[in-house]
Length: 194
Ligand SMILES: Cc1cc2nc3c(=O)[nH]c(=O)nc-3n(C[C@H](O)[C@H](O)[C@H](O)COP(=O)(O)O)c2cc1C
Image (tube, rainbow, N blue to C red; front, side, top):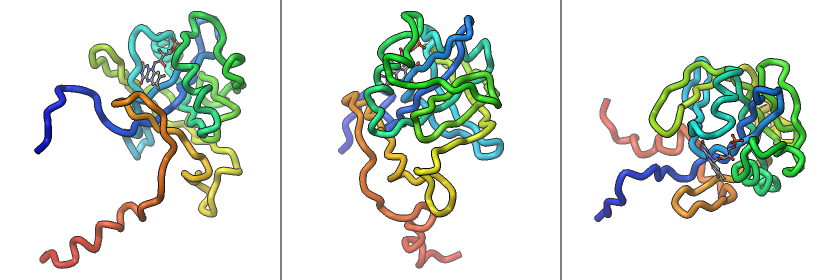
């Protein structure tokens, strides 16, 4: 029997994304986000929930743009650092060992060292309470060539992104491959009458 745990945001795992934006003064800023995901195919969109107290919240609202930077496991401490310190306290790129690159497509910086980047324009800002859900329309997805598979798309094992468990507030590496999506379940419907 399942035990009720109360109304808690216990999705697991969550992504570990680093959101890039520019401040009022043009300084590049980063923040970690775990409350986020893909939310539309056409047009391709992502959604990121940002608490109103974050410097990034005002940055994204003002510039109507942000980047999603997906770290590899080797950069998990850098990804954590930018979620511990506010850009109000100064630059986060240098202490984290990261380099800002100006997007040519949207008004936000991305992270040179992270293998996958999504450049987004804000399409919607939905007020939910503590957080604003920024829906970003993806202008371009970029990836380092060494993480691409034979199909030209990023391979999960090569990207090796950390994920987060909100329950124990820890980072994990992605585990083993279980099988192909959109086909592994087909055998279960074989006896179904249509
Ligand atoms: C693992 C992790 C996940 C986080 N997820 C979110 C999130 O989804 N939304 C949010 O508003 N803050 C989140 N934070 C907190 C912000 O990243 C943090 O407050 C950051 O310092 C804000 O920086 P800024 O004030 O420069 O924008 C997270 C922090 C960590 C370490």
